Length: 353
Image (cartoon, rainbow, N blue to C red):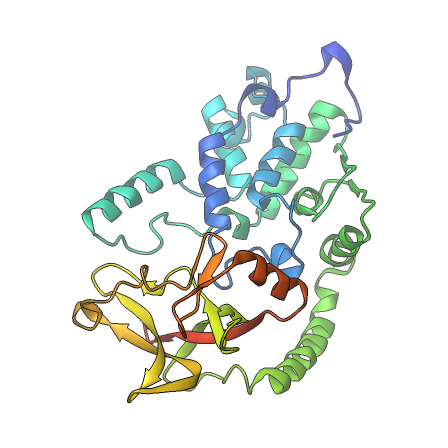
């Protein structure tokens, strides 16, 4: 953060030096990282970056580093703004700017209590969308700039010398702050250019081109993948294709799926997979799979005990003998490790199966 005025011992204390809602931000980080299709921030789905910070945590870091800690003088300077009348109001405004539009701590407690009792709360349990989805209202951004200009003599710049996946500059731009991002890694530079620089420069002008070229790319991929991933019909939607890595059995040469356990779902309505290598007394050439649903179907079958992979070693379902970890690693390094689809998760209406 580079203030336009102030500095040294006489500068105002920063909000982050006095207070930061760690618990609230932590809960929102968990919500942001939930593995739900379509729920990840678009910046994260653009390109995987191993050190990318959660957007809500980046928002808190940026705002906490430019906003001054509340003092009575702020309320006196801006009597027309209810957000600055008290320290409590100021902190609530900070959370609102971060996209936290409720009390996630209380909501998380109620969700945990409901889960323990087997009850389902209405909606998502929080009463508002994940924080990263809630852009700050323009009037709040204008008010923020007014406060920052009064304190620092101008709107401060945010400088990220190792910007990586771009979470910090992305959030700084959401608040209309002058932003500089630097990177040495060419992959990160590309991610920053596409996800932060270009979008902030051209904005909605990109929409038509993104739709055009995005649909063209989707069409090409659909044509290439439809044989392996059948398109949904009108009654069900595919949620996930579940694959296993495979090696050839060193003794029989047949395919061995490496699976740590065959559970698909536990609980009151259990579902598991059973690997089948023989039918009608005849050994098959390739493994096939049966889906077992319900306690009755699973009676006498332990999906964990039937695992073919554990602690770096495997058991061949063809002869029951151990496959050493050194052999598996050698196959992988030689490019001979394969993959095999053994289950498809679909959603029919509101039911997943």
